[in-house]
Length: 463
Ligand code: AMP
Ligand code: ZN
Image (tube, rainbow, N blue to C red; front, side, top):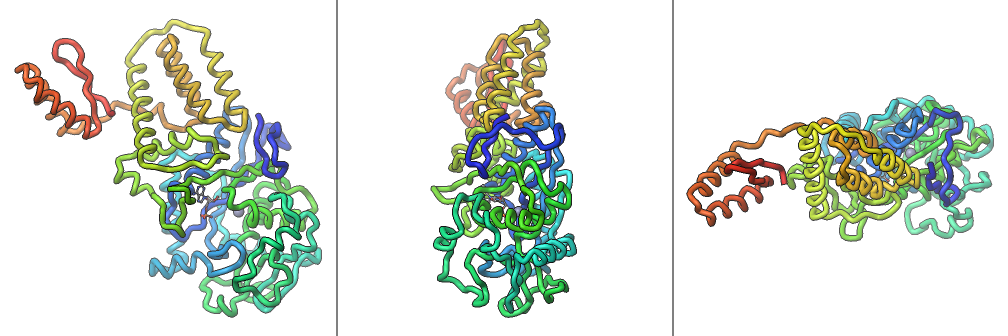
């Protein structure tokens, strides 16, 4: 299987360190606000990666963190802690805020049929381990202390910048100096490992004792700590959004490799953004949509999953309600096909089956070309394979797509629709075709279509 590795900026053949086991770490959400479908593009694509690995016979151990402390509004140590900000907004405690939005996150990932990680771990449950790691870095001479924080000294880590392909000197030039900076900070690229409860943080709710003083962890240290604790010092794959490349992941590498002297991550897998009108869908731009918005627009969460499958994870993707609606229509069509195939009973064998499996595998093995895999599925459904073979093949493909097709069942048609259809039947019997046509249009606008079969009988389907 070939995967694009951000570290080497090239497509590489993926082989885990200890086959058939694969160690996979995902940067989880910062739980201070509602999860939106922009986040979900990243988590669905990570799930497709994980499912593809499982489909290919690997045993995946998957860990994801929950950030519930230390992530400031500016990723580069500017601003305030997002959790404190969220708590102020909701009027709840920081702990309740974290719990509320964590629950919402998992409600969303469940709705999108994302397989939960084997281990989900909260930053606030790992303070002791984080302090140990900071201690290691201190012993190696990679840290310094100011009145405000303990910092990682990026000038002491020779390969700082290797993930984003920028030398430290370039990074320094790019770093913003028009914002508040700790006067004791030596280089703008240095980042906090531990903040003290002083100055702008003097009222910080979450705080712990440490050998350096009372305070709370910086954002990056949690992922180094939890990745190494649960998966070992060197792991196979680490995932996140492309926004994590220049700071968060660069800093995770500095912390982990600075402490162990070993390679931290073999493959860095980064997802590109879901956009709205050429801007990243984000909480800060207030251009985001949640599960509730999908419901209002009568779009199933799995239709959004189907929509995401149609673009490559490294490409930007623009979200529109039109595209969501056509994804819903596509999903409805698929479900109707499943129901029809279940009713048919042909069983003749045809050798084309392996041909599609091979093409499906080829598409996914080529850096997860999901849209090609979807095209292979539609092609397969149009062949003369028996219905039994088609269903088997479709359910096999769906182990990666995750559209829950096997669970498709005849849905209950609402009474309102049945009544309209009955009225239309009477209109047709009376040869009132104008009325019958109007009723068909009305039924269509409510999301259903009628297929006439013989003797004034009909089938009702979702559009
Ligand atoms: P956060 O909770 O902000 O730390 O984000 C959680 C994950 O969602 C990160 O991996 C982000 O890169 C990703 N993410 C946030 N917004 C988007 C977006 N519009 N499109 C794709 N991924 C996103
Ligand atoms: Zn992380």
